[in-house]
Amino acid sequence: MQGLYGSRGITLSGGHGAIVEDVNGNAYIDFYCGSGAALFGHCHPYLVKALKEASEKPWTIGIGMGSEARSRFIEALRDIFPGMDCFFCNSGSEAIEAALKLVTFLNSKRKKIFALRRSFHGRTLGALSITFNPQYRNPWTHVLLPVIHAEPNELQSMIDDDTVAVFVEPVRGEGGVYPLDESLGKGIVEACKRHGALIVSDEVQCGWGRCGDYSVSSKRGLDPDIICFAKGVAGGLPVGMMLWKEELGGFPPSGHSSTYGGSPLVMSVALAALRLLQNEDYMAKAVKFGEFFRALLKKTNSPLVREVRGMGFMNGVELTVKSAPIVKQLQDMGLLALPAGPFVVRFLSPLVAEKEHFERAADMFDEVLKRNEHGYGK
Image: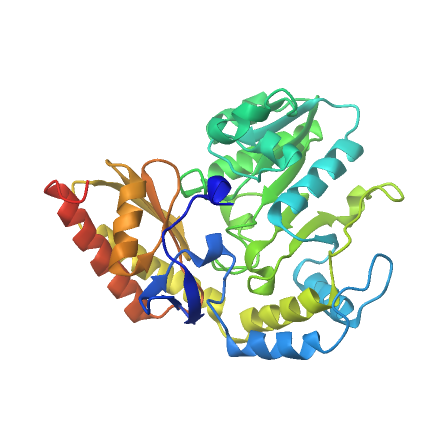
């Protein structure tokens, strides 16, 4: 496993809220959050209660069986996304795979699929076809779909009548934390509508409250036909969702399936997580403290900083030095972050993070940058 995922060199044994502890008793501010999946931090009491209650009932019931928990979640989902149908699965990659199957079925006579440069959509074969990073793609190029990757400002002129779909991250995360320019998003939508191409919005990392709303597509100029969610939907339990406009139609009979998708256990916790978003002002908090954190990061005034960018609790700092050593030094100080490409440090803060966490994180980041300005820690 370590050969696939690498090792951060620590073993976590506990945690509450925005703090985790390792087996040696060291505490860390967790702005890594399991690559963003721990949206509400760790052991949120409301989610723990929901999980305990759901664990006393059937966990998995199989395909075709009704579930009260799933039905309640779907009802709540339709209030947020009227006119959209939903397919439940277990991860972001699976949601993207479902979207890929659906668009190629709905636009079956077309051949071109577009995605953005610096995009990341997963590492299963279909999702990997849409992902940009050559490091991930190169060993499997002989079996990947022929997807065209382009910059956002190039896409509008490239979309034509042979275009199946355009896959877009409203905020590209893995590729460097790039919020899509709203005007470019609108241009992509106009071109897709003009040529009958479909738009798939990948909000696996940026959506479901992290950036200040259930979906941030409209804030980036997009009007997607399909939206993919995962990561924090059930507070960190394995879940994926693909939503699509009902007017498009759907899969053919038996055209897709998932054994564990929409299981009662996960749906119960997902419904509890949704109630937290609705009742605790977490999304407004993500907007407010996201702006606060970016302002703190900009105050470092370090010559190593090229740009600070982000949206809500999804933020990145582009540096003039490699990001991986900086991330390691932050970890040694007690702050967990992650790279987003070779020169960007990414912070995926949990919705439960408080002002003091952001202030301490900014102070640690500032100290690490100062060390590296003087040639230390390289």
